[in-house]
Image (tube, rainbow, N blue to C red; front, side, top):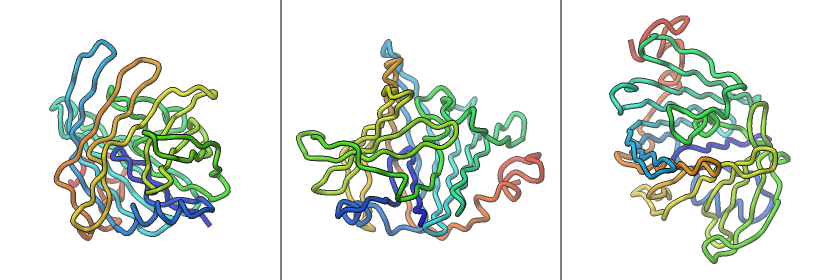
Length: 255
């Protein structure tokens, strides 16, 4: 059985595949919602300490445990406003993504060669902004250790074509995601760290912020969230590239 795995900029993972009681803790903490939207404030810090700010809107729809959608729309800076990443994952485990650029009024597919490329000067790749399916047999426990002095376990996520290996560290007592390490050729190249979490009014756990750090360049992108909405009644039509962009990607979103 395949299980939906959503690694979003806000570090929410919608399901897990581990054969121990940590899976139950993890699912109780993060599962239950059908759809989700939030405005994301981004702060991009260069190696020298220079800062740039941005803003985007991210929405997710979980159609079922084997099918999901993600749509990220850039709001700021104004020069990039309207740029979108649209991601689908289907029951066969295939991820499909489109990049929409307002200046061209076209949505182009994102192929495997671009999967780990940075998106608009951030430390996030297209994989980080995507939706994935993970088979239980594709995840395995690969380590144990301490995360902020709390016992935690590491689980490897098997990469697909064009992807780097990702290792998720989960706190044993709570089932909370602590961080995710990204490896290229067995060398850690990025780390996604999760900030302090709190429960929403609906009972779902959310981090105050998450930070993706590029371990090679020293740059990092920090994301925090506002205008959070759960279960607003989204439909799959809102994630249909033909309906959003028009035939051949020749129309602007929503036109």
